[in-house]
Image (tube, rainbow, N blue to C red; front, side, top):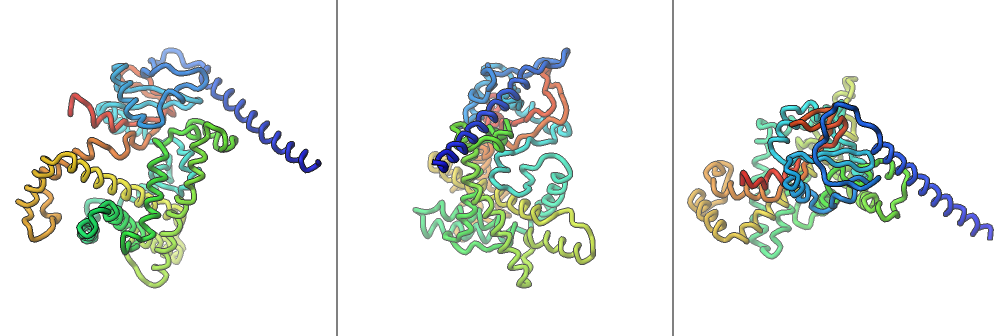
Length: 421
């Protein structure tokens, strides 16, 4: 009896805590909505009608929001749309002109990023893509840029050629499972660059690890768009069994996959380093710099967690994007046999029948390159890009953009601008 009473007491406490948390959230959201705005400021950008307390939280769809944003932009005859939910403000840029003006010409005013609470819950180490503007962001950018400058990417060309040949052979040997060869190709390149690891075959466990990470990120929705991102307190104070906390459940389900990618390849790379091998990978280079600094009693700004996160950035930036692009490229050719025929004729004319295309052939394969560019245009791999955040209030075309507003460039809308394409 005493045990049952104790259990009931624990349950009541959990319910009370949840109710209290919900009440606090509602109060906070109401206060943010009703807080008086400064007089004399220009109007906010147009937006569809919102709901009391919830704002646009239920108005914006979870799936293919970029298409809905593009439709609203036409409906309201504006290239900038404004939204709010639980005190969080965001705008969507639906034209190249708006994106160029705000994110390029006024880039310093939009250099920040929102806090990616959902990705924090998923277990990401410090990663350039998700870092906010500040010393840590600048450090990661400074460290990640050198290996991918025009003068350095040529160092990867021989390895890319070798993996491309292996991919083609895999598709010829097993045409029914051609996508398996593509996945191996994508994973092999980024894992070699980041960690110096070799992907021996299509059944390599490294491929599954990279695929799990790609699935976790790809199905998590637009960055900074979950209820946790809109109202971070929900991740800390509300349980994940609540119906509207499915994103928190998702994050915690996939956390082991993210942690595996961040930890296991890194440890494998360190093991090869301890054996005396130096594969010139990103991890080996950064760990050597760190070790040399320690020997010379120099400070290390880039700690081990930073190196883990930066290496994982290389994988997530190049793995799924390459796989998806090649998959779409093949599918579009299958849907458009005339384009496929013209591309094959061009390859036969430029390359011949005795070898595979090489880097020197690329400038001559103009039609094939145009097909690739059209693949990029039709299906941008990040339709809403990586969001920025305004560091100060700004005015664009008579519309006020408050400080701290999240900014999404609707790449899909720009690539489907009917006045251009």
